Length: 149
Image (cartoon, rainbow, N blue to C red; front, side, top):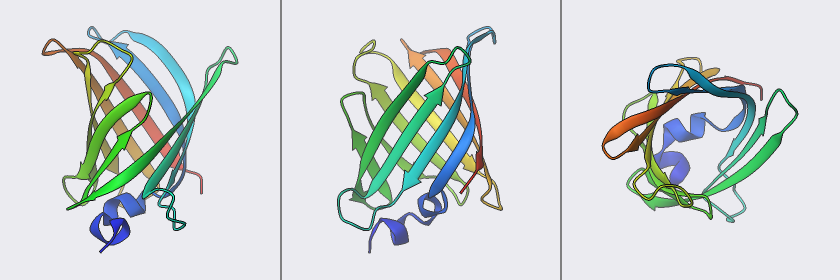
């Protein structure tokens, strides 16, 4: 079987998602916020098993775009390894995906842990990143998204 059959929750995430990323420090103070548009695909052309494009826009006009091709490992697990990040993800239940990754160009001890919860109707996602360094959570990212296509 393939990624679509082995990871049905991931297949439900396929589409375009618009939202907001809010970064908070350990005390809960907002340190950054920006809009996002994410494209999540399971390409049928054989190039990649999973392909995500993240576009970010800040209020001051700055923009960033990042691409995350993924490889299906089997047993319901997928990995990504780009110049920016390296990690793995899998479903933990019928609505939640868990990711663990590292930023390659950051503190070698910094790890990120993410939960993505898809609403029952598949139209909304809530995501939470925990940034852990030296065994302590140093930052959190809160992401709310709505499906736009």
